[in-house]
Image (tube, rainbow, N blue to C red; front, side, top):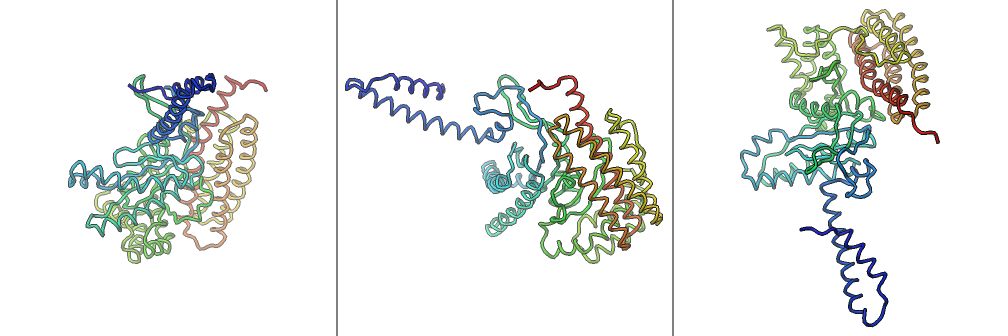
Length: 470
């Protein structure tokens, strides 16, 4: 039966304070002092052990100062970046080992990854067998840099395994950014701290997609648009998918900084051609996509995503089977499903989406003057609307105002980048039109479904339950 160490420690302290320092009490006083010191050390050890199972950061997120204050149903809402990683072919690997070897291997691998995640301000939420789920509460850049550091540490780990005669280990990592509910779940006899959110499901799905594309690291469009400076990384568009349970397609991006130098440099040289090929593929011009993919693979034979897309093109030409989001229009129409229920948000967004559709068609058709006018109009409209929206968020005390502003800033930056691309004149019209769809139209749709819907819910709750006056 365990002791209540804090209670015993407190009792001893009280007794010590009440004992007089007489000769008769000297022996008992010395004994009690020794007992207090022992309990103090035992309490510190117990707290350190608890911290291995319940991270201190989790308690801080829930504003808990002592683990004894944890109770079922505690919750808080935070915006975080979620990282999922998983060992490739672990089932086959584990079948070649006995149980002891399995645990030794897992602990050897996980002990390599844990300090890397911590160094980049990440918190390991849980281990799921060979998988790691980590939270990055400060910045999406922490998650991406942490993932790249994990892959770098894996290279060093595999060097040691190879020298010892073992097969190298491969992992896949998926990263997504969004609002999560963090709290305690379970029952009276067993509870756990965790995060619950659609954003968590997306990051897990992205990790699984690394197997499909043969790459180690994928991020969502939400993470891409939340990065402080995406240009510091090697990032390229990989696919536009309607993930399971999702209403609208979402873009997926590969971060290839950790590729070996020759492959990384070759991917960078062919990135424009590769992304043009994917634009043609997603807009159902398969012969044009195939031609560009062949050119990419002639220079970069080891480009697995390019090879996968070439196989998809060949399969389409042979069977008519098309693998993709199924949405090939450049000018998507606004639907009631996109409404958040606030006229001052829904009206401008509906208008803006129509403008973006016209912009994409103008670019595709080579109507440069119309495209320039549409770009200028969209930018002016967006800046004015964003300023108004941010003013409202400030007035109502919206807790995720900085993150929302970051998203707005990225949208305007994408408009400016597109304008510069058109001005230079060395662009493929269809590719630029597809970029308009990905970075502007899709951004607007998913921003409405995620960020603005959350804002609208917050504002409605604020009306129902206004904060007490100071």
